[in-house]
Length: 268
Image (cartoon, rainbow, N blue to C red; front, side):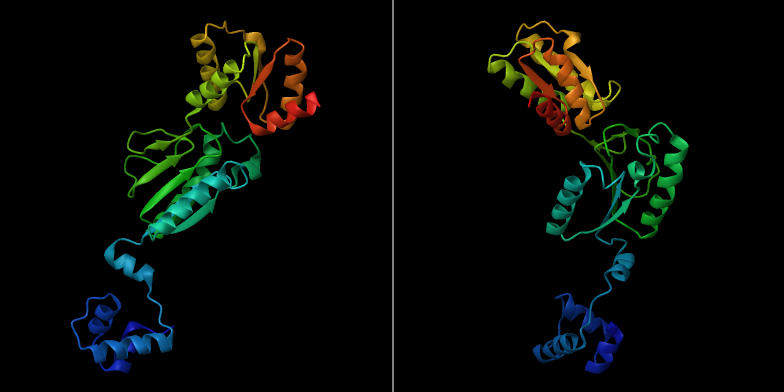
C-alpha cells in the first residue's frame, strides 16, 4: 500500500503538504492541490486510521464485549449501537464471549470461569487502543469486569455494574409491567395470572413488582397462587397456562414472548 511519503515524492512536495491537503488545511496553490489529489486517486491511497489514532491518542473505535450474540436480546442491542456509531463516524469492534453457547446457564455462579474468559478479551481490546468499551449482558445481573482504574470510558448494558464509576443501561422492567397489567385491568380483567422466569431472576422480580403495584393501585388483592415461575422457554408457558386456567384466570401476563407462545399452544 502506497504511503504518504511516496505520494509526497511523486508530487515533489513535503509530507506535511500532502497531509494538509488531505485534511483540508493546505496553504498551497490550487495547481499543487489538484496534483496531489490526482495522485491520491490514481494510486488508491487509503489513510492508516489506526496509526493516526495512535498518534492522536484517539482511534474513534468502540469495542463491544457481548455475553453471547446468540442470546435473542443481543442482536438488536448490537445493531442499534453500531447504527449510532456509524452516524457519529465511529468504528465498532465486537468480541463474543459465547457464554451461553459454552456452558448454557451453568456459568452464571462461577466467577472464576467468567473471569478466565473475559479478562483476556479485555486486555486484547485495550491493546487495540479503543476509545471506549460497552459490555452487553445476556440478561440483567451484577457483572464484574471493570474496576475503578479502567483506563477508558466503559458502559454496562443490560447488566448492572458493580462500581459507580461505570454507568449501567437497563430495561425499565417495573413500569413496563405496570403498563401491561393496567391495560388488562382497563379491559375488565381482575383475576390475572402471571408467568415469569426463574424466581431469583432480576427481570422476573421487577416485573412481578410492577404486576403487584398495578393490582394494588386498582384495589385488587394480590394472590400468590396466580403466579407461576418457569425458565423463559415455550414449554414453561404451556405448563403455566395449564395450571393457571384451572384457577379461573381471565388473562395471563407473560414475562417473555416465548412463554406467551406456550400459553397460545395450550389455549389452542
